[in-house]
Length: 605
Image (cartoon, rainbow, N blue to C red; front, top):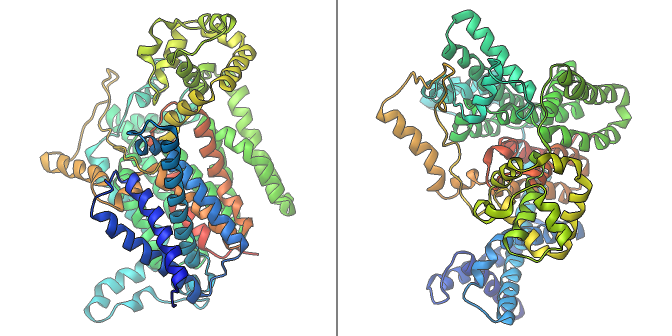
């Protein structure tokens, strides 16, 4: 494609703004030689995109352009909400500060808009994707790719994998996770895990602070193991191994679902390796947390829904029902997310009401019965009010720590609950537990009795000091949507100090094992591209891109597949007590292959 003089000028200006944004984002100085390199790369890259769009014949229609514009604004806003102070830290003039922020925003918009158009030209091209990702209707042989001596070895394995793809995926995950199980035997138990184990042993009363149903599940496998062996350590490993199998089964369920939609075996193998080889999956598979079976439940729920849209079978309905109960009962936010999704699911499946309405309403009714009458009958203590007020408490605390003037009645209302003497010392903008414990140490019963007054106070302070509220919210949630942060994920190991009779008893040990585990965990913070898989923000951006791709392909019926995870993510953003807790959105990370394949497959009519 020929570039005229006007085109060169336009691309040069766009490249200039893009380089300015990248320079600020990478903390590069304006005189760095690499600014020229970046300018040239951007110039040729933007021209390549135009050439690609022209030669591919991709329909860059109104729907595609609108989706790209919307996502580019969203990505720019998410990135700059955290990063913008670095762009203006040396500037005091308000006009200069506004000018620099505006220039960087324009640069990011140009970059993201063009990059999204390029990606959409590939993912939105259904015909080319059919050739690349999917088998023809008649099928093909995975082993036919191998020749000569490779055919004897790799070909045999390929035939075995293709013939028993679900079982092979399940076993491959377990095999790759086995070293973590042997090293962390009987499983990783943090203070949260110990709390649930104390309930299993009836050392403390039942509580739904950590989901009661998950506690009962731990107890069921522990009691089975103890009955068979009489050894507490071995008994605890029964639950850990079950959790590994559940997580591996959910991954294999996705793989078999992909095969139902004719994805090539090599694509299925790549998805399997994502689960089997990424170290945090192995660590989490042996960590006694509610978040792990919950992530498996979300995966099974999503895959079952995708299967049921193709063909209704008893197995898919059974998995759909069981996984729906896991979503409702294994995390508090799962219950709220399911209630949020329920009306949309009922509307979506209204044409098959005889099949889906009893199942969906049955999940709702059983979860409701367990959460209230059954738990009350077993005297299960529910989480206190403070537990769900992490973000509002942080926002009010930020106003107090910034010494904002309050009316006398507002200050009196707050002082009736907490002692303000040490609030500045205890307030951590990225961690709400300090403020929650300060409230619990005061008079939380006063908060329970005056909820309306405190809600009014929270709203009034928000309207008066919106900047403080916004800053506090960004500080408390940025880890889930800002893509340029690395968190040391899955670094927990062993069993927290306890006198209950369970301790870390590794079956494999030695400096080589310890070093291998340490390197596996730390590589995510050292290797580019690979490290993005360790970022919650990057995973969210991919998730949003997949949703955008649904609009570009004009397959809006697919949005139902993203609804549960979207609702769950929103509940995290509403009530998270920690800004960077990877396990809170592990369901999103674990489901990454599902979101990608859902965006690319042809939806059944």
